Image 1 (tube, helix red, strand yellow):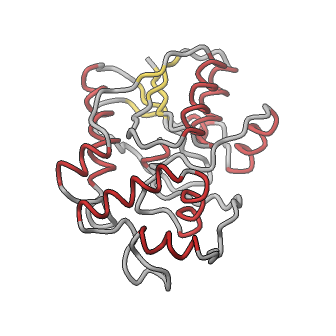
Image 2 (cartoon, one colour; image 1 turned 90 degrees about the horizontal axis):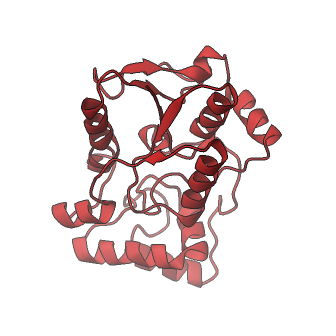
Length: 233
């Protein structure tokens, strides 16, 4: 059975839609963190409805559970969020379904990455089979009139850029407030100190935003920058 690693991003969305268009049989696997933004959840539901597939969501604990468990926030040195919320549940599902073929949205213009989840499945890379690069992916989604959400990672991802924190504060204040809560609770910050001239803490950052200070990169632009390869799957 083909299992498509589906994140809701450009690559995996085009992969799901094109495989359906070609009449291939497959299931879609999504590993939720419990910290997805509403646009992503709506997009995933739309794509599943369009292809008539049931979404597989392996059981797991949420990002907030693990932050509470470790009394810590994930960061560049401790990326346990990727391992515990994305990789481990996927491996568990593959182990429970031996003989599966995991279809990954790796494009022809990307660096080759084979066997990300270990020897628990056969791997397939249809976008590479078709010779599709980023231009092909974008053209295909435009042809289908499919708009992919800006963010497919966690709302509180430590890897997001300053402009994304600004947009989170502006567009999803309730999620931003959760970030402030977890920083206060753990005594740590999602943003690295000294990363830029702005405060690292979200409470102090909010004060800057509320004063009218707007960071560069606060507008959504199509830069094809992805914070985490696994979070795209």
